[in-house]
Length: 104
Image (tube, rainbow, N blue to C red; front, side):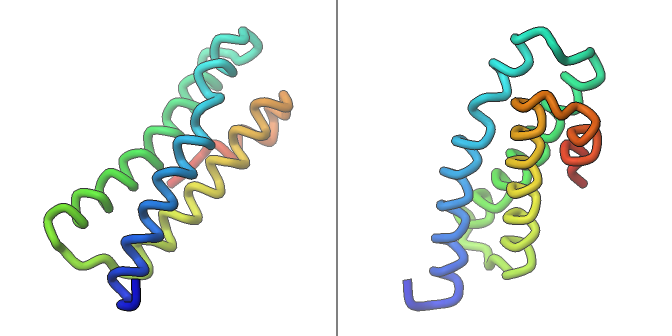
């Protein structure tokens, strides 16, 4: 893609793929039994927030609405935080996860 919009759209598609890879371990982490109920909710909410953010960007693409770099950057930042959240949960760094899994 040579246009700014084209590059932003490609970025969203890359974020979609990265999200599915990042979020894939969450059901197994939850099922493993070492998270308390609040931590389970936090993990699910973190994943859902990023999913919703990407879904909104995809909806804009389908509707031929313009994307802004700040929207794509925000989604990138939140996805990076989700990756840290999942890493913390997988490694049983549950204190760190209290922070990394709180995505705004």
